[in-house]
Image (cartoon, rainbow, N blue to C red; front, side, top):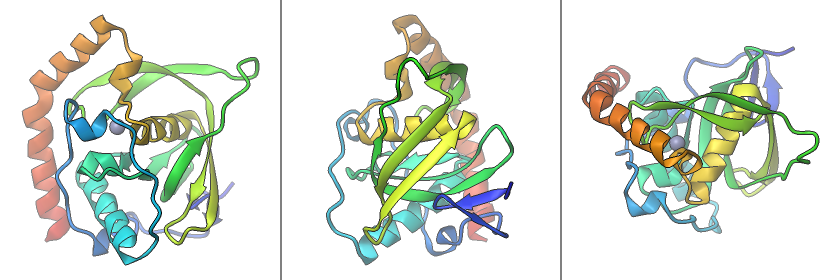
Length: 208
Ligand SMILES: [Zn+2]
């Protein structure tokens, strides 16, 4: 089994950071409560240098924040796309971007839910258990508009579902009970400063 998949395809070798990150700039990450995170994003209709530059910025911003995935509305851009660099439960690394992602509906009879820890760069410092299917298939396009299908299992399936939720205007807190949501927001209060200090240190290290 190859250990790295890029844009859904196996590659022989790959650098620790996606090459996009070297061309990108760090953007501010939006936080839960900001409107752009709580309404469905617009379809991408223009494929060109502006879209490619946005993807570059999103990769670097994701790495600086130690994230496994990042949607465009998490950098304040109201468009349907996300980037990821995420392991699955078999130790395979998955790296890429997808534009206009749509999650395949799963047959409820055949799906298995995993109730495991999940965090979000827009809910800094909180980790909560969220039930998610153990498999996900996302259909969309790449930055040049070519059709793209990405499949994932385990933690990577969780990432694909989480990021597709973002472009649909949902955050994972929306999948929790009121009590769990309050618990997550208390974790943010406790850990937010620490998370931002680490992001600042990473920004320094990665732009040095
Ligand atoms: Zn998120």
